[in-house]
Structures are given as C-alpha cells and as structure tokens.
Amino acid sequence: MPVVSLKEIVDRAFSERYGVAAINVVNDLTMEAVLAAAVEQRSPVIIQTSVKTVRSVGLDLLFAMWRELTAGIEVPVSLHLDHCPDRAVISSCLRKGWNSVLFDASALPVEENQRQTVEVVAEARSYGAHVEGEIESITGVEDDVGTDEEQARQSLPVALEFIRATGIDVFAPAIGNAHGVYHSEPKLDAQRVSDIVAAVPIPIALHGGTGMTDAQFSDLIARGCAKVNISTALKVRYMKANLDFLRGAEERDSWDPPSLFTSVRAAVLDMAASHMKRFGSVGKAW
Ligand code: 13P
Image 1 (cartoon, rainbow, N blue to C red):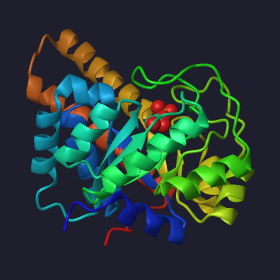
Image 2: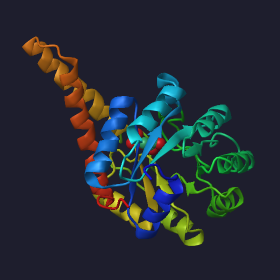
Image 3: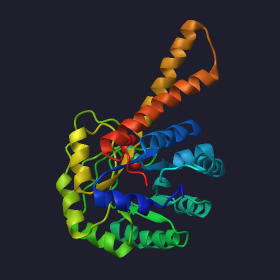
Image 4: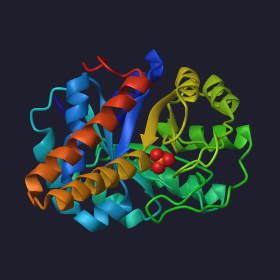
C-alpha cells in the first residue's frame, strides 16, 4: 500500500521521535526526484504542494503525476496541501484525493479560525483525510501566502483549546521559525513545542526548515516535531542546478534537454536524501 494517510506517517514518527521530511515540490521532475530519494533511503516522505503549485501545474495534472509516480512505490508516502487560506482550493484538493491539508486561517481572529477549522476537519474526515492547523502565521511569505511581519504568539491555553476543540491531527506553532532564507541562525522557542506536547500529545509540524542547524533539528524532533517542512532548499537547489548546467552547456555549445533533466534530478534527489538523513527517517519505511 504505497500511499498512506498523513496521520499514519506522522503518528509513528512522533511516537518513535524521528522527523519526516515534508518537501514542497514544484513540478514533475522535483516530485519524482523526492520520491526517488525516499525509495533509495527506505524513508517515509510527505510530498507538499503549495496553492501556487496547484494553480501553476493544474490540479488534475498534478494529481495525475502523483498517482502515476507513486503507483507501486514501496515506501510510505502522502500528499499534503501546504498553507491554504482558500476553502475552495481545500475542497477541490480533498475531493481529488490529497491526503491532508494545512488550513491556514492564521490571518483570522483565533475564534473564527477555530470555527472554520472545525468545518475543515469534518470535511477532511469525510474523505478519510487529515488536517494540520495553525493559529499564528509563520513569518515569511511562502509562494505568495503569509507575511514578513512576525505575529504575536497566542498563549498556551489558547493553543491547547484550539487543538482540542478542532480535532486537528498536526499542529504548526510559531516558534521563531520563518519561511525562506535565514540571515542569521534562528532563535527558536523549543520549550513551546515541549509545553504543547506535554499537555496534548499531538505531532508538531516544524515550518521554515531550510537553514536550521543539525542541533536544532535533533532537539526539536526529540521534543515532538514529527513533520519537518522544507521548501526553500528545494527551490534553491533546483534553480542553481539548472543554472550550473546551463552555464556549462553554453560553454560547450551543447544543448541536450534530457542531460539537463538528469543533472537537476540528481541534485534535487541529493538534497532530499540529505534531509532524510538529518531527520533520522532513513530505514524507517514499513
Ligand atoms: P522553508 O521554505 O524555510 O524551507 O519552509 C518551508 C515550509 O515551512 C513550508 O510550509
């Protein structure tokens, strides 16, 4: 059974305290390369799509790629819609077959966010799908969603009430993490993860993974961050691998697209595999 639910992947990682890479892909090449890394490393993986990717590739084509590329795959994989404030896109992805969604209503007052997240959880359940929730926006704009202004964090009781009342499967708290490139080592409030997990044993999603140190990853994963989001690292690796190859092609005056794809695929696969190694999920496939 190749494609499994998000809950199956993160609950096991949470109880055994390893992290599963949740990597944002942008097209067929990157989706294939990340899945190939998971197969090579015998690791579970979560493939994420931003709303921008859903729109740029097209929902039907993106899902057809997913179905084709995971047919017969021998490691547990799951398809997740990342930060989505748009209920219509959430409904379309759930209806199509995405395994889980992050309903990002962090721009709304927390009471309204909670009310709507309850509805999204009920909708997801009707498809056997799962939901990640958040109550503060993670700093930084990711594929046109979010803000560069750091939002005030909600209190622990508000966070716990949100988790309990909504029945979400994964929680994404702001802990000083940010999407994009960190210009200095991030100062992370790891204790917040421990406080939440001690009160409600829920797998935590660690956003803004690109640029965190090995020590930060191990500490946060040990505290309960079972889903570790990586997006910028893939974008940078993908574009730089294209650039490097194309510079060489220009020098050689040799123009062979399949060679470009092979070279870029290898770079993306290497990036994904190295994160799986750092998060301790290698060999954890079942
Ligand atoms: P980075 O872009 O910093 O890797 O963050 C990814 C993320 O959190 C996606 O939701």
